[in-house]
Length: 438
Ligand code: PMP
Figure (tube, rainbow, N blue to C red):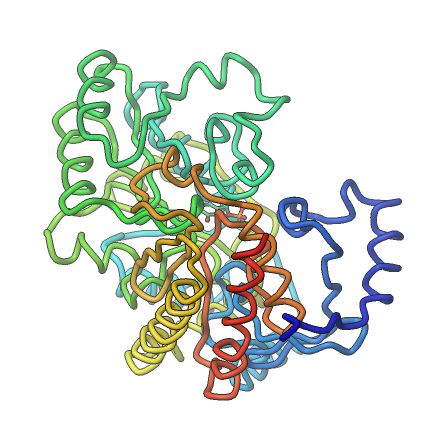
């Protein structure tokens, strides 16, 4: 049987052409452009629950969920109502507001951080956390891992995952050599490399930043005890341990990525960063940590950090509504849905003899088009990206919107019900056959 019929995409194509004339690549964030998989990105006009609708009237089951934020699904009625209510009272005051306090309290209650500061994007969160770490330690060097993405912050773009990996650029032009020189990039899950870096440069290292469980080179979980080892190594050298939970926070588990190992092994990051889910689909992010460290921030301390729209009342209202609705039942549903989809994907790929490896972090997972377990970025780079592109397009043609890159996590939501999951499962066999013949 032929894999699929191609849906009409004339309206998206016309919009993409106009977009390219006025915006580089036609997109406002590179991975949206379909560079790695080819073809025309769909211009989405509305979304509801698990579904996206495009400019040509096609519907798709959404397995991107806005790259993480839409934990409850799109246009959740209670979140929409809270947002509408907030908007009716004005959209930005430039003063402190109640929802900021309540969202901060909610984050503090769910995670090991004692105080938080709100910003507007994950990039700002990691940028500010690093400045705070440098200010608090009086040191300059930053340690990161190849394949971990922490936003487009100068010193953190070296060998970053996500869109940087998708475009196969080792770094990026525009980052000063002096900035890159302050970053040590190590292979993930490699204790010896971490030990060697701290032995050589320990007294100059301000912080080590890592994704709690990396999701930007596909899902590459820390080997058991790896994060605990990082926390201890940092402590031994007077450096700060920053766990970036922009993607995993309130998503991988109710306690984020930390819930998978830190809560069990009993270590606590010095600083953490959050974004995505905590903004409920609006631009909101945060960094936080120990109270004494956060005291270095202005106006209490001498590390300056600020933002016109930081803690915006509409964004914090959306985030607060989202977190309050994200109950244990929601996380149980996400886990079960993710398991159903990843098992079916693996079954379909096995039936079509496509080498693959499925890796998981709580309700997040990704499918590597490579037969070997992936423990670092070098392993993730072994994938057959041509097979992924064929798989991706066959899924899209059958009404399932996967991330347009093999280096990304797949995301589900509380709204992924039986109809949505069935649509995904029904599409998998033909997509697996398309991958096999790519
Ligand atoms: N850190 C991690 C772990 C991320 O996944 C991302 C975004 N995917 C960022 C930071 C940057 O967040 P933003 O795109 O909101 O700037």
